Length: 359
Image (spheres, rainbow, N blue to C red):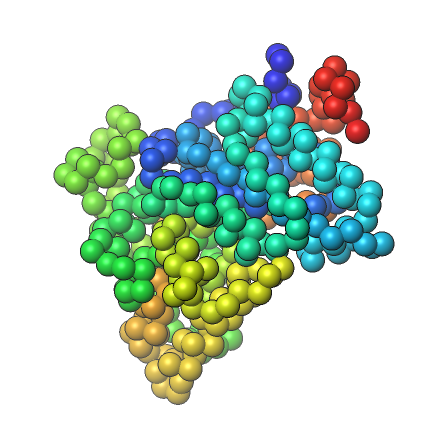
């Protein structure tokens, strides 16, 4: 093998659990920034392989936005601050990512790496990536959140296309954003009821037949019996940055554009600003007895159109992997499921020793 990946570590075979999505429909934008375990690439390789295998998005265009940093005496990774040593490790990591984008068989193969010179923070780093997206939908990913169970993204996109047909981004009642359940959002309904007294109830959307309207061209040879007729979505009363698909135009218009809901400060996360704005707006519009009326909450939420995917399994679809845990660099992290797509430090030393790129 001439590629960077190592063999024999994987717990799961590299066979897609979900039919591949046609690449004209969606682009993946993943943000990355310094973490303690750099220059290890295991974490981001795990994330991209999970996106390919469990979400069927391996053929989609991939954009990696590497945020800039501020160099100081102490590390504050969440704030984009790191020591000179951590900065050196981050640069080394980025050089490895560049190599993986050219490595046959790597889950990063073909990805475009956009390295920012200055610290932007998650929100504005994501905006830089979104400006390069030409597809109607985007999967927003982070370097430490992976899929853990299969999700058929094509069903979600078909529902979004149908719901948003003949509308503009400022229209109420759209499906603009669909997040995939995490340990946080899995209990969203009970959480907002107990903490804020807000009643939310899932909505059921019809999944269109691809043979009727030509949607989902990447479905392959599956039969009609395998395709669910409906999709259940629970309104999210606050935005979460975790893995989600969204309308590209909505993002560029309502999250970042002139019609934006709220100004997003440089250096921050979307959920910290837009998420709180959404919650505050919905609570104000549903003050008093309206809060316990799910229909009233749905009307207040309609301007945002943010939902979380639900199915009968009631299991998480995405999980967080701690990039500051030393086990993630060594490959022994129990949350890893695709070790055969990782590149070990031993393998990197072999590659960098040969190419002269050792740091």
